[in-house]
Length: 401
Image (cartoon, rainbow, N blue to C red; front, side, top):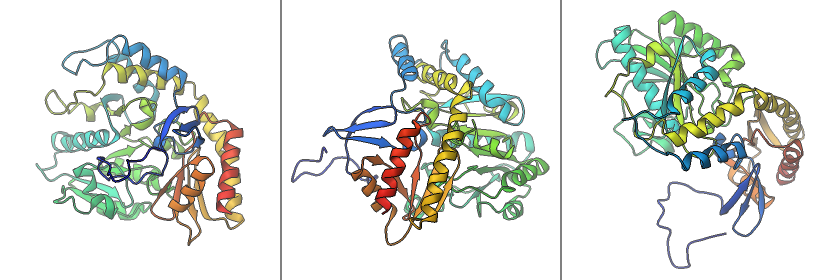
């Protein structure tokens, strides 16, 4: 494990507290550290690695494009930009409300910021909300990124504290409470921004009636429904979008993480053309958004998802895995387990903390990440074999004991 030399401090800003392991190689569901030890990766880069490390289709696409053209900026078009937008619209368009449009960006937080800007401008230009009075309703426990605007409506003290003054225009209501959300909507409301499933919070799944009720309310009150699918989207839940699980079609969807296949940052907002169309030249942009390398990898990612095989695989493996995780709750080794597709939030029994469990797993050759003290999140690659999934679960069981 590579550490800073004795008597010296790292020059890295201390904004992360990583587990004590230094990774040097990865392939599929496995990674190797600088001492040659192998680990099963059950974090998958917070779902950025939905297809595992160095998926051959994705690395081939990246290598081929690197030898041709990597960046033009949006001052010029390139041959992959329209095909990328068209294929992404074809994949996700049927799952959103209305004819789709695509706006490519880089990171997930940028996609959320883009959706916020589009919703506000739509509110002013189309809905007729008075200037500078637009409001957006969000849920407590949310995680949409760490930009100044986004942390302004975070309820996580670590993410929020010390970064004020905060951006106004947001109303926070309890997650899963459709009535509280309805009470927060008024004539200034332009959008409701939600994660269909809250990932950072510990894979928190809302009540069955929640998202359909929110969709009905937004339609009735002429309010945009923005689904943040940056962690939950692109196969993780056994569907292309988690919103599909409830038959809900958002007006805008933010995508990221897995859209870049773990190769580079790629994000996008996909949704109603009449909403994204309010962003005219000069009102929004990105030097790297939709660059040729990003589009090449993004097209390869879309190709992996178009057949539906990986989504079906996440469903099938998830059912097998879920039965094993539920058994750990029944045996008293966990206090609770929440799972959808190949995504799980596990609550550990005090006095053990989530961090301690992740350290135990690390010692047993499994990578996982804790959140909010007593919870760990697991997100195996959608390409993991059932044998490796069982091996990881065996090691989890041993660590809990």
